Length: 203
Image 1 (cartoon, helix red, strand yellow):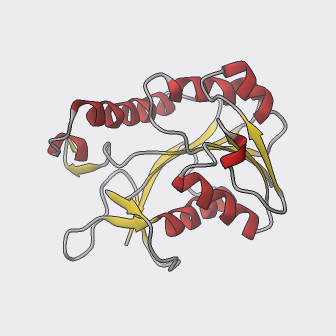
Image 2 (tube, one colour; image 1 turned 60 degrees about the vertical axis):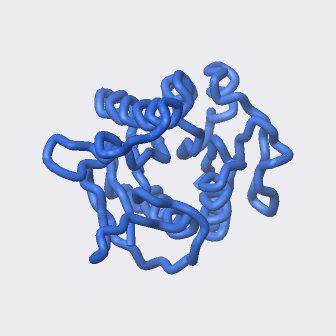
């Protein structure tokens, strides 16, 4: 496929780009600073401000799928969604947050945390983004929440998938590496098992 990745220079975005290329896909790597985007065969780096709907739509046009790995800055997620719709790209995968995952009936992970207000705003933006997508009928969207903890680590290819509930191991931990998250995301792109749904991943 020919895939556009928004936020391609971030920790997760970079891994997604490399996973896509490793599987033979072509990637347009979109970042605010194109010089920080991944480079290599089958990667075309483009500078783009995700908050600019018209400019982002122009960058996305003609791709088979769009993936957003942009941060949850207030107002940015709806702008990206508007750009995807305007571009005519139908398949959209959003790197989601873990804060909206359920840890008990009616209770989200973010409801159990005591974090600084700026961080809580980011978690709330992730929750709002999921609500926005659930009301979206024009796109084949997927919201992919990571585990509660995501960071550098091994590429194992061994993990468990879940739906709206936080996935934990026998010790109650919920974690995933950037590399394994990228594997699961590209699996979803290729297989389309969670279209118009949210899913999650953890060890």
